[in-house]
Image (cartoon, rainbow over all chains, first blue to last red; front, top):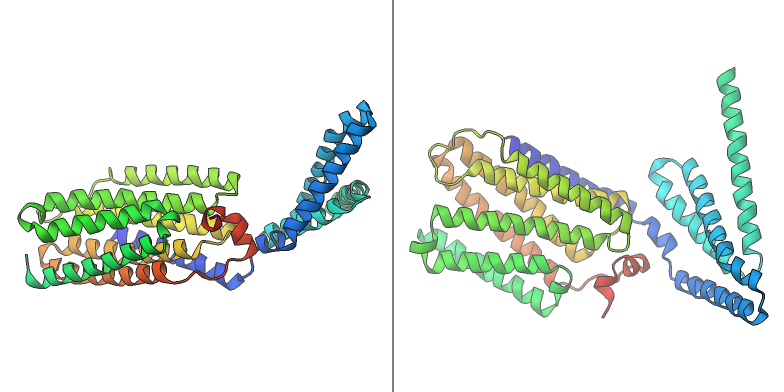
Length: 143
Length: 228
């Protein structure tokens, strides 16, 4: 009878998870993987390719050497920002928030100019907000 | 072989044939190879029992084929889980470790002492634990997919719902048989083929129907389903 009980519990969990998933209907992945995403990816790829060609033609070795670390820093900033924002969201909506922030980040990256500055500003603002929140939390606890 | 049992066996055989035809003609085997192998194995096993009952309608053969089907179900659930998370490497690695852990737990559960089986030649307790373990694996895959908000492919969903309902009925029927002994065999013979025929009906519908239009997310998360 224990086996039947385990089977009933597993059946309830499996069907319950499917039903819960159907109730939500909309997946966070649909936000990120929307039809405009392939176009965005193409824009980002074209932008990066243009930067590489410019670096090659200019013969500026320092620019060439900084190109890849610069891009990595850009993406790292996007990830930090996305994690900070998602951290503040309630657990059930965390994944959806992360995907929405990433999608917005891709839009910024695809811009012809200014992507790096916007992400850097967002990154600094998010860190500053966290610092203020931590200070406020400490202040509340102190009282 | 009992004539009514033979008739039910033939009916299930026809359903299995229609299901296999759907899997082949609709090319569903590309979506889950192990499920096609499972259906084929069940079809061959049942036909052997039906055609040569003296050789194959025995407790030893029945136990052997049920163990084989049990392992095939584990492979089906694992394949569906790994395909669902094909584009999410970290989640896929986590699922793989989870499945390994659950299979190990299922094997350990087989070592737990079982109650006496009223002198029956088939290890009912072991079979019931095996089916319940497979159902736990299935629940783990579905719950992880819900956790990551990853859609299940409609075909996989049909296969899993069919397995979940059938495994529950099958495990319960085995539990009843184990508790009551030989007098409950008639209940088992009524419950098991009826549930299996209903499951076959669901799987036939799943394999023959036209898939709904996939969302952009499903196209990217399930490249194995939509690449030509």
